[in-house]
Image (cartoon, rainbow, N blue to C red; front, side):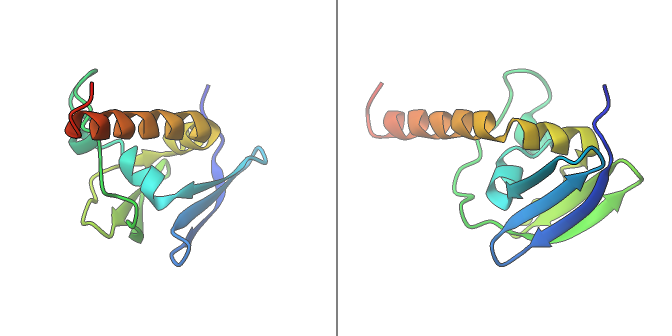
Length: 121
């Protein structure tokens, strides 16, 4: 099933989140850091399963520009220079719907890396 089409997209630069409303009434507030670490780009996702690259140090990242991509997506430019992720409506809806679970997974991966870097297992 295809996700609904957005009816409104607002970038809140000061508080660093993207607000997106869909035609089915769903409304999501997606932090820039969350969007950056879940970029659909090959730079982040790799070229296949298991090739994902954990993004670290993105707490203060913002979005400086958002470009439309046809009638199906947007491509944000992040303040760290990343600008190759094309966020389809389906993907944005997925991120919004699953934000809590995805964020928890990301934080667990960060904690695991931090633990290993401190000599833990």
